[in-house]
Length: 341
Ligand SMILES: O=C(O)CCC(=O)C(=O)O
Ligand SMILES: [Fe+2]
Image 1 (cartoon, helix red, strand yellow):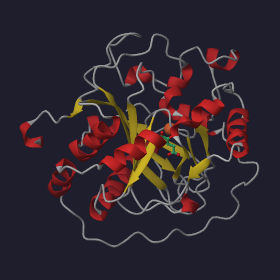
Image 2: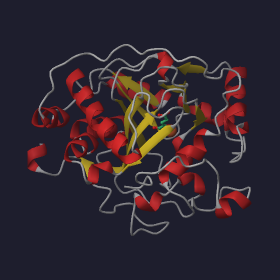
Image 3: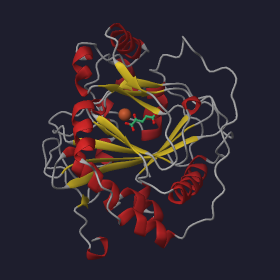
């Protein structure tokens, strides 16, 4: 586990060299949870602060399904059409309905609630307010989550969208945007992943329906709008980067897909896709599993920065410039085991 275990509230401040220097060229010195606590402080919430919270729609009442049924579903292929691929190529993201069944979605939520509540010694859906909780590498010690993370169904969608023959796992990320937690700042993931390739995609797998009030992931389109904001300097101390990106997108009337996710709907975003998420204005935790995959054969960049977070946890025993193919980066598609065929 990389997230500080049963951590008490960590104050979101930079420490060590990260606090002293104004550049982002030094490595991240704290754990992954501290990274998220810091990162969310870079989002501008001044225009629309979270005031009152509302009830989310109750979760559907469904009979629990067996882990073996979930595993079967996560192996079954999902058909990605030529139109889906073209949409992803042009826009850098796609939202696909029915990637998970409602029962498999709720089973995921049950498992993530257990994981997050144990890790942070809290209860979800209101026990912790206004915070973004994150646990990575859960697949290493949780059999059921392993099926969701290494899922041939999900990894094949990633490979099809990237149009590459094989993908590896970069990392999993169990995330909970707690009630009252503000916006996720505008960014693209290319900043975060120290991989020397653009063939990187994140499957953002909601563990419940996500209404607009709960803060669905939202994507600027088309993909090349990142070029409009390439010149904006990242500022690690305040919200200026987020504000400037928002202003440029507004001035250029950039389209933003910020609609809700129905149960079982999963989005896939490319590492050049600019995205953000609204605040969670409901009393329900917005729980998501985000799995990032990259084209087999990619290398680590020559000079990872602090924005890359604690990447050596995800690609251990690997130096900058090396092939990114550690034991924690299995090929998820094509599925290796015959039982995954
Ligand atoms: O869930 C969020 O609010 C942000 C997630 C994100 O940026 C990502 O998965 O790339
Ligand atoms: Fe992201």
